[in-house]
Image (cartoon, rainbow, N blue to C red; front, side):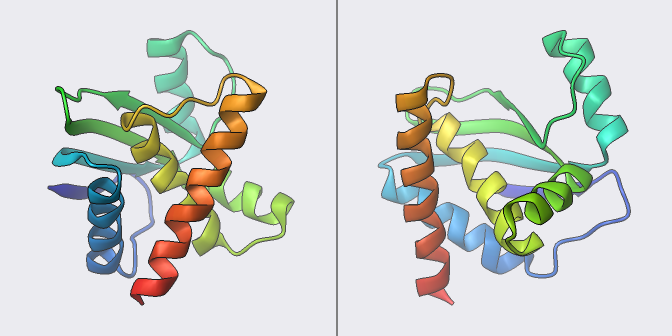
Length: 139
């Protein structure tokens, strides 16, 4: 089950469509959907989590905590709406596109994809693009 939680003045306009798309992403990676919680927040909220749990004193757009068991994906994905908006501006894409990219990025981490090395990051970007295309086809 994919659940959306809000710790800031923001709500997804199309929860059902996004939830369905993310479920299809999980299936396309031969994984099972467990409980995945998205928590939308602001920079301050996510910075506190970054400091407390990862000891990083930096702003970020997403932090995911992976509780997956075997092939079943479970976890909490925190998303800073402020960072997503800034990144969308920087990358010259819509807020909605950047938000979907960040959301699928978290799921792809649970599927085993990494982004610490340049080659891993290239694979992650490819997978993000592939999964974003699935959303456009579905609609």
